[in-house]
Structures are given as C-alpha cells and as structure tokens.
Length: 129
Image (cartoon, rainbow, N blue to C red; front, side, top):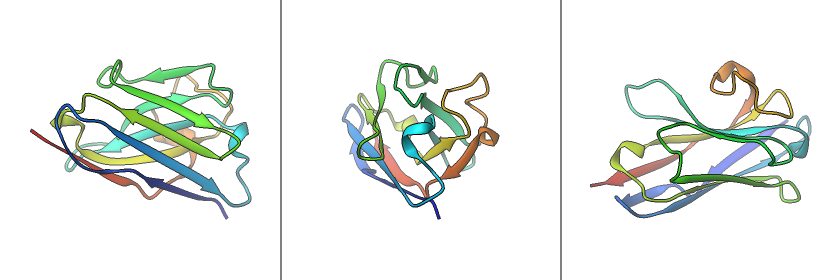
C-alpha cells in the first residue's frame, strides 16, 4: 500500500517562507520512476496544480501564480518531494497536496488531477496579511 505524507505547513505572515515535504513509502510506487507534483485547494475553489517535476528533475513546470516564488525539488534516495515557498501571499492559503504522476515525465496534462495515481492527505498553509 502506498503512503504519501505531507508536512511543513503552518501559519505564516505574508512575505515569509515555508518548506513543504512529502515522504512516500510502501509497495506499489517506485518513487524514483515517476514524476511528482504539488497541488493546492483553497476553500470554495477547485484544486489547482502548482508544480510538476520529472523523475530525473530535468523537467520542471510551475503555474503562473507561483512562478519565481516557489521551487520544487526531489530527493529520490529519500523518496521525498519538496516545495520551497518564498514570498508567500495571502492568496497562497490552501491545503497543499503531493501527487504521484502515472508517468516518469510531466505531460501536457500535468495540471489535470486525472494524471495522478496517488495522493497525500494534505497539509494546510495559511498566510496572513
């Protein structure tokens, strides 16, 4: 059974930083073989794709709303995905989820939730103004 656990969320002031982590474990998912992404969902809004990283870290995508402020990375030896979030804004407030892609790369549909096999339970990020 695959388990994906996010951590690192919290309450911060605007302009500050947070670093999210997502540790994967269990049989059925060879972490190093799949692309990984971060999504977020704010209350009353649809789930939004934030960033995707290919299995080799050579291909990375960001949504326009976080480009230049967030940095995705991964450590395949530790089965861990990261999201460094700098210059946080109140509109970044959301539940953040990690997700394992069906493939090794970030496809053209990387923003679609249907592209993902497994999801974490989420970690809350709240940014105050």
